[in-house]
Length: 511
Image (cartoon, rainbow, N blue to C red; front, side, top):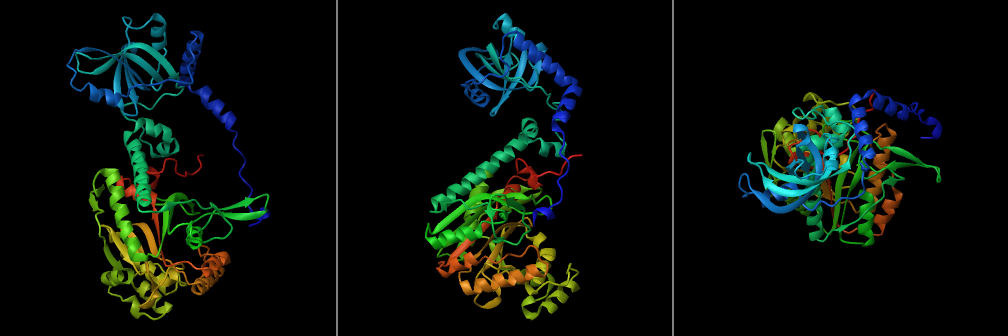
């Protein structure tokens, strides 16, 4: 794509004018700005640089769990958090931090007049620091009698109404910060995501894998079948692709002997539509293990799945809707053509041409466009008749050579490969295989991909001659694996959309 081929960008929005107009029209914001100015007149900085909270609400609740009703301690506590409720003109404040909630009691018996003046200028959403004595009220509420209140951040916009929270999905995804403030389940989902990635990384490092990084900008499209994003490097005057997969670079590291085991957890980018299972940028873990094959890789998938399920939920089980998924290995293993035959009665291995395979798929009512080869027709039938029924974890093995340009051939059936995909709840979670390390075979498969691309398949790979050259220096027998982190987190957190597990998903433009 040349510069002249690119469509003209849309006229830029005047975001400065839009911001000023929205601010001027918001009477609630103006009331808070007035309080902000009042704080400044009192000599108070509404946005100080530092505060040291020495305690957390959750830890205080645990430490004083046995404190009797009406009991006043002699212990002082210092907490910081966001105001989520104000009662009795500021006498009682509910302060929320990362660990939970604690009540703050603001009274003239404990606060100086200038402190009481500050309390009257506080609003819901403000972030404050409080130091005072811990007690339990006659109503049984663990409370801090505030002796000092510090404003740490004056919030200029009000939070959504307390009892209804933030329900609109579009707003939740566009303004994730507001979603996280209002919805504890969103915070829990993203915290579990972090725990899942940490557990995955820890397991691989414990098993001797070396974490590496590979380029995000690729000069050649490869490593997967997908439509790319294209960008332009001005200094080199060349188009580059945002990577669709790190595979070919990771295997170059195995060729070079950096380690017998490498992995990367990072972003991939695919120029595809939005759906509950697809976001244009997504997180993948890919690993490559020298002297291993696809059977070894299936074993490590099972170890990974059980490990991350325990990290998320404390058990190898995950509840997704009304289903209970059990990630305890070993998983069931079935060949793709066997599953199709079980479901449809058609043995694709008995069909000796692309025409026969397409005819069989059409007879089953599957969507066939007419250009599919034998393996692509089998894949279509699998996706339309079998995939959605794969609920408990299963490895679907022996994918066709036609759709697996980087996998070793099955020695018993040259139309198939030593490749598998792991499914659960009808969703593909991982893709692994015995890596093709025959440079002549690899060159021929790249040639076939180029022909597909020339015939109109814009997801086919390009020729990567340097990768073939790397293979000619010798790639040892190697097993490879890719796991989609986002889909895995969806299953382990009972999240119906990929947008629920990505902090800042791609959104359509507003307006």
